[in-house]
Length: 406
Image (cartoon, rainbow, N blue to C red; front, side):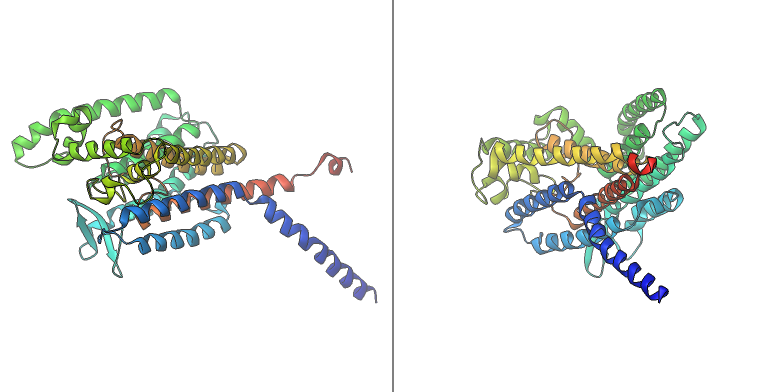
């Protein structure tokens, strides 16, 4: 009789706890993050639909597939406890390098616009170096979390730099300078947040800048000596020269920049109207659905649409910063890597369309055409959602003052 009563009491307690568990889940979800990401995706789909019309090389349904696949992986990363992957630096490094080198595998690698950056699997073309960004974030966060906010050993600092350089070098072999720079920014963002010595970071940046100057100086000399491109491709040099002087290549890369400025300027305050843009609609704007998608938005929705997008980006960064501040060491570093990736790509992509940054193939997060970059951005949202939820659960699990006294 006593056992039966105990079982009934246990069942009643279980039933009583069930609503609180549901409420615990509901209140621990970062709804603002998810709603913000959904708005960015919706705006991106609207603009991509306009930019891809009349362009057989682009498929809007493929973009929808990218959103669906990305949402599924986002949910998986959200469900998984990110803390179980804290000691994954070596595995993440190997995965990032394999993904970056996979376009060079004969039979699956695809060369487009002079670069071996894509692979074709089951008839679908994907860019593996985009997916390598997520392992790179886990790699650096896992590595830096060991030092608990104080990286004071020069030997350890050099080891961290080596972890950044290895996947970067693999991407540069494609060659893909834009994605390599994203890896660099992810690494330095996590190093900064992870407590690396500020003087070392400054010296590294200065040495890197001097190295870039040296490469630019030696490149034409080596090209002339060996009769081929040795360090940099001609189009990479031209992009930098056009950034410095827009009139240098008016029919080539300079034409792209000139048309992007015309598109942004013609939008005015409220835009020329949805699917009414002449620059993208008549084909004057090259790579409109991908690299220059911001110009399509600015032309059709004007200053109001552009500032709406920038406002959504700012809110995304602020929400993510709030999550990073409240999380544990590993969680903070993961979120910092995602923020660094987003902020750099936003600044570089919008900046290049306005002539304020050199032209690169870096996509605009949640906006540019491409299922690979869409999946990666949604993966980052899933990581931040996972960190946010576990942080909220930990806060709820802490005993109150009344419970401590009792």
